[in-house]
Amino acid sequence: MRSMQERASSENARHDELLQARYGSQGRPASVFVNPTIETLLAHKSVRSFLAEPLPEGAIETMVAAAQSAATSSNLHQWSVVAVTDPQVKAKVWALAAGSSGSNNQFIGQAPVILLWIADISRNCEIAAAEGGDLVVPDYLDAFVMATVDAALAAQNAAVAAESMGLGYCFIGAARNNARELADLLGLPRLSYVTFGLVVGRPDNSKPATVRPRPAQEVVLHFNHYDGKQARESLAGYEPEFSKFREAAGLPKMTWRESVVNSMKFSYMDGREKLRDTVIARGFLLR
Ligand SMILES: Cc1cc2nc3c(=O)[nH]c(=O)nc-3n(C[C@H](O)[C@H](O)[C@H](O)COP(=O)(O)O)c2cc1C
Image (cartoon, rainbow, N blue to C red):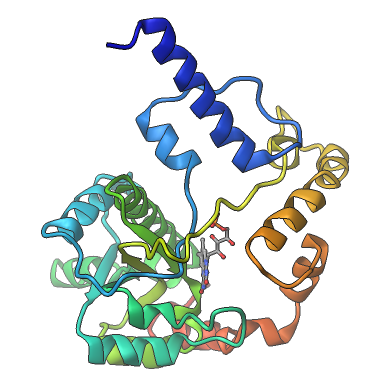
């Protein structure tokens, strides 16, 4: 049996390894509180290569139980999720979510499931209408934001649950590339739209994903008031980590600043410029 001291020292080494992978040689927190939940969070990496194996029995239901355990605005549960497992439907989802960049999201076809997370105020609007209530709030932008935030929180809980079960995942914002067609494919009611997808499966470890470093905490963490100067200055330390990651992952050379510039170009949208028109047509007035 290992002594308590040995256990503590191997845990410290593990925490150090996790923080090293996340921040590299940038400044990083001197110590973080670590437990199995936080270890799972710190070790996160998006997976884009999957084995053609079904998920273990109960995995989808476990992820949805985790998702339903997330906080939800005013206990209103304004989200839904469609689990697409049928290869033919999945192929159509992929065709609608194929983008012009990187992997083109072809791994949607490989993985056993894509969960489509839906901001959904349709159920509650139906209830209020049946009760003869005034449907005022749904016309406002805030109703759209509330449902979108609810869907995102639920999905992130499901994602963490997936990783804790040894599964891999990748979010798919490209599910909004053709939001109208995807809503039609899934038979969504009005007052709902697919916010993003989440591909889940068993990672193909012959093409392992690596942890993508993050900028130092000073870039995102402010105490009491926003300090843009500190954030700008601290960002300089991110470029070497970003380059190292790209090189190790076999990705073409690019600075992080260049990736930011690219993300602002029209070509980056891949159809998502139509999203506002689509959600308005689906009943969100965004007042
Ligand atoms: C809302 C959202 C949408 C995303 N959409 C895509 C996508 O369409 N395709 C893709 O390959 N990755 C997508 N990603 C994954 C990000 O590229 C990834 O999280 C980011 O590069 C950080 O890498 P990491 O998750 O491995 O730490 C998305 C992530 C989020 C949060």
